[in-house]
Structures are given as structure tokens and as C-alpha cells.
Image (cartoon, rainbow, N blue to C red; front, side, top):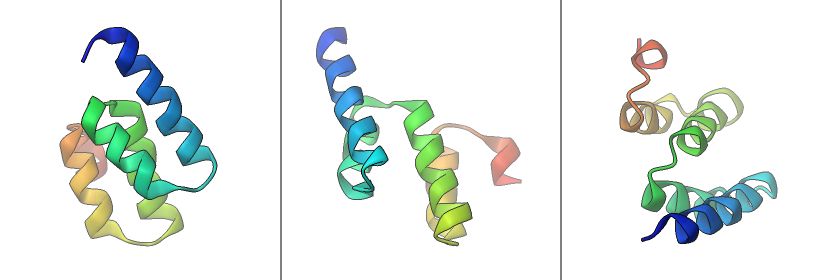
Length: 69
């Protein structure tokens, strides 16, 4: 994918995230490798949903060793 398409997908992913559609946001963030989005998704899973094992997957994806520890 080119950079323009990636930017558009990330915008759409952010909209999904902000509207609470985490499933669609996750798919886009993973597809584009959007580190900030994946970190926000992991934080949401860890702090809001209290699902640390699911959050761990995304923290590892973006190499956030500080959060993994």
C-alpha cells in the first residue's frame, strides 16, 4: 500500500476507535502497522476492559517492553 492509502486507512481506523468499534479499528491498525493506534488499543484493553493478556499481544507487537514488564 502506498503512503496515501495508509494515511486514509489510519484515519478511518481512528474514527472507528473513537466511535467504539474496536474490532474494525484493530483490523486497520494491524494491517497498516500503526504503532500509536495499536498502543491505544492495548491501553484500552488493559485499563478499560481489564483484559491484560489481550493487551499484551499488542504491546509486544509495537515493542512496548515498558508496558509488558
